[in-house]
Image (cartoon, rainbow, N blue to C red; front, top):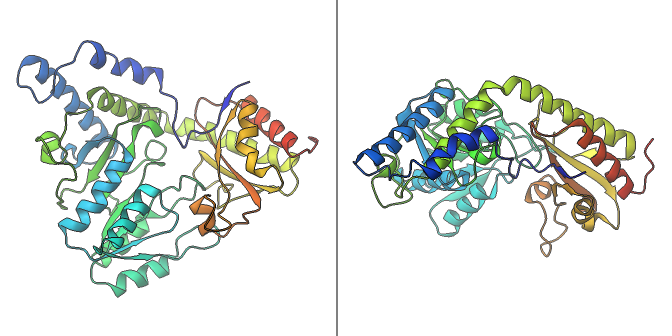
Length: 379
């Protein structure tokens, strides 16, 4: 059996999405900036896709900009937002995605901002009281805090964070890459300036994402060139990618409740199987909590000499997952998220992430093989 449990890294392309994209690979090949009929036909398709995304997120099409993915969208939000508004102070957490952390760290290194980190509890949740204290201490801050953590599955209360930011005159950007397509976001209600999505996290194509920018919040472009994306992002549009993103998000919204229930069932089954078969197994962050991101489970395994070979040994058994224990020193590269949570670096850590295409039989197989790797007989 060959099993793919690394859906937080990327998901398989939905065949229905591929069929929607195919005409724009083979037949409808015009440049959308061209004014002739070939170009106009493609331009119309892009704007239909923009409208689809906007309607699903309950916002205006004028607030949706297509990008090459989540990383570009995060960089645009952070770099352009900070420069355009002359911001000198930013707030984030030590468990953000590197697309956020490395961008903010570089700005601080170059003397553009002072960066503050909000406190976290032992499970990785943000201390909202500390966030409010940081906001109160500075006249205007740029706040970048994710919705769903890609490693441990914690869900931040971005509604409350947004309210705190508005109350203190701060700008709020959220990396929502892991939650777009898995949860509904109502941008008429959410107090947020920028948020991002990436199609390949919800069964769309790679290399395409979007950036939401609130219409009352203006920033300069991050990529200069032509007048594409209403002068906000130069470069010929990834047409088939845009078509695929909109179709994938449409499918995700149409079947969201049933997929969430099904995938949560797979995750619960994995938790039960591992607890039954591996003594002293644990779960990092709050990933075993039913209220966490239902697609992600971060497993904390007992100490073993074989922990360094864990992913390799799973791969031999045709199981694809991802992992990385906490860093025990500055000399080894591990998970910055687990390091921030001060998890035991001697224990193994592996992230299983699920999708609508996984099966209960795959869960059983993986739990059995993992137990065998730890030389424990299944009960």
